[in-house]
Image (tube, rainbow, N blue to C red; front, top):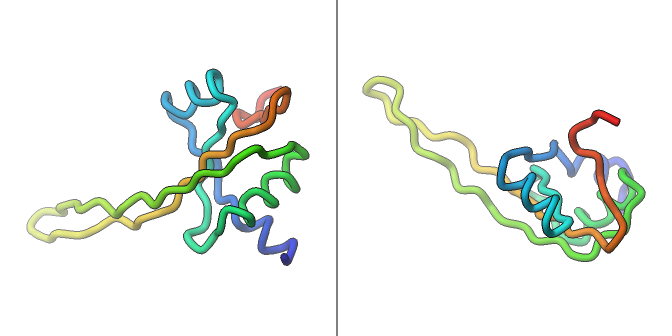
Length: 98
């Protein structure tokens, strides 16, 4: 796989209360990824960028949300989310502070 593509697959970490609990309890981290990304590509991208060993990758597509702007009905974009489970003893610093 092309290394440039792997670097572009991970869009950003998805930080919320739920994802923080997943990180603490189950050693899982959540990332927003490109919609064309596959599980093996996501696994290689995380291992390349963070120097960790990935145990499992679970993906899901977040459906677009319908919104109203006055009388006009529009839609937000859909996106893809990846849950990354790391092997024991591994961790990722998603917050950025050290």
